[in-house]
Length: 499
View 1: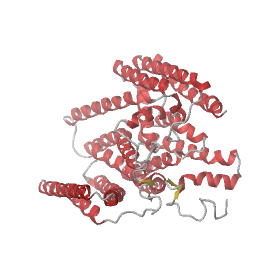
View 2: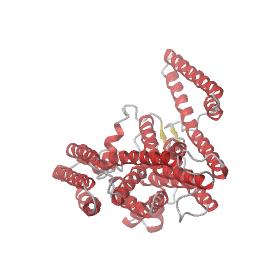
View 3: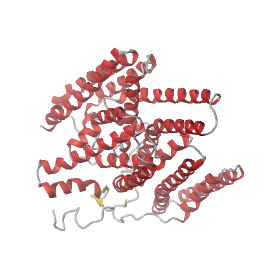
View 4: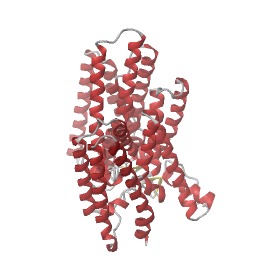
């Protein structure tokens, strides 16, 4: 492993492996084999270590956002999702982006909003810890999955959650959070600008190479019209008093025009900004709903609960806003009112962060899949946190759930069950980004998985419709069933598929 022919020796991490894969994705396996030898232990130990670290990070994030019970539920939900436990068991390239994304969001959230309950660390310590975690996560994310997914998604998620939560604008906390929001905006712009410039350069070079002068002229005209529209919008926002947003729009136009394209290998076209090759392969068709099906398998068996978790989150946020509006009429002035406002903003931020993370991640991963290539869903912890927070509220609040939640879970599970019946092989291929061949002797496994998903969905739906002791009994049974399916896949399905 130390000779010059090894693709991992004497090469920068920004250079690719096989022309289109980031080199850093293979470093855990390289280190494991070098330290433990060329054997099964050397290949599996790095994956297991990253999996344990990922579970620790999501437990810390769930505990910081809500409670330790939420963190524990988030760890159990993550442990039973196929994309995670198969990546932890096999030599997968998906685990490092998931870990980097979780570290980035935890670090940026700690740095931007250093508060999280009675047991939270002090403000200065929280910001130092957040900066360190964010630096590690963003570096790993940028090298492993590119700036678009590894850096822009965490920055945009935290910034959007802070903006929607309505952080306090007065006092020391308000000024600090406004500064943090500005820094997140700069980080997001720094992550997106090289990618945008690379796409523009690629479009111009493609048109020039094809000799399509008319198409090149039309593309140039569209870019000029877009730049003029952005500058006009900046002028209008300036007149309306939104000078900060106006400066951002104007800076975007100027930066895209003057920023040089990122370095790319001449032979393969690999770009470290993207951690891949732009428009490779060229025959791939990705729509806005393409990711839904793969997410159904990657999150199984929790796919049917995600929709109910999002609906329950909106219901809870609406009730919180209504109670806050009702309380303002009778609230006093001074420190007590400021404390109440800050606490309410924190509650909104902690609830909206997983949703903003999931939405931004869905859009950016879809864009990356369309422009670069298939990639694992790095923001996997976002839907996991949504489900964990929802289950925690369902266990502690008998008023949550009901018939609508039961209907959401039932419809989601029926959709996933249908996909299992038609394409059961996608269950074991979520961590590799492509469909594996499913042997004929295992054809009955798809039906078994379909029946298992329908059974778990019915169990969760009935539990959400019930109240009291029965709900507190059935929901943990559903969690045990999900873990049982994961164990069956690891110790039963995967060995059978390998044979």
